[in-house]
Length: 129
Image (cartoon, rainbow, N blue to C red; front, side, top):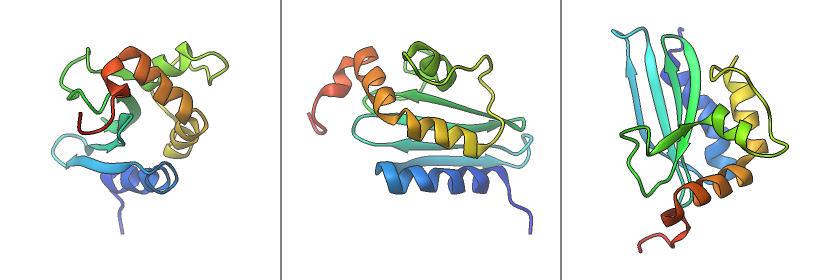
């Protein structure tokens, strides 16, 4: 049985969903477009997308209070990690595999949430406000 990129992303996201109490709020897969897929995860304090685009694995983060429609509403995960003191340093926004990606998110999760809150201050408000 062949596993498509969406299934790979959902399997990787399962660890974050369970451990970090994120929920899957969006997902897509396109066989016609090189197997491109994405999974969007969200909590009251952070939104992140895990993305396969032309077989390249990437991720970005943003505020759950802003739709991820343009570059003002999200930022590449690698760029974010490079801005966080003592976090993982990478030269490329493309990840080797989902294990490496999920490990980086999990290890630096609290710092990522803080980063989002500082970049998009409305994120600090209580859900429903």
